[in-house]
Length: 125
Image 1 (tube, one colour):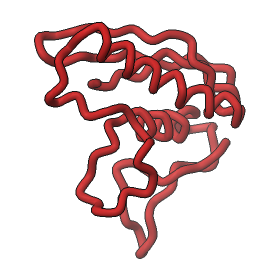
Image 2: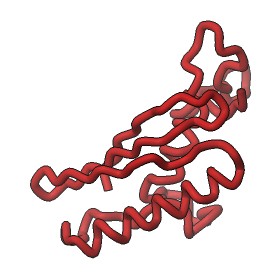
Image 3: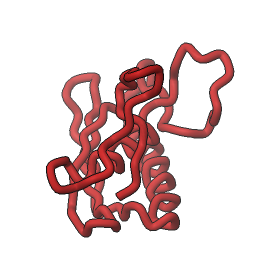
């Protein structure tokens, strides 16, 4: 199982806490779920020098909830999953979009290629 930094970051002993290495007593897909969640978020932060400006979906705060905006966010998510599948981490199964007023929720169903489990992740887009 691949490990990643625990999100949100927690400092323990002067270092960032990592996801557990063993899968016997822990959630097996936690590290991958964190990687996917960080990739598909809008990428906005207070960091004046963002490491990768093309990461994430566009900030939808002032974007109209249109079919075109939905298609753009879905295409971006599919692009991220193409990279994850090439790295043999995850394969996209389905994207479902629901609109609740001005907020658009995207439910991403994916297959964890390490464990074979199917997972769902919900993000606001």
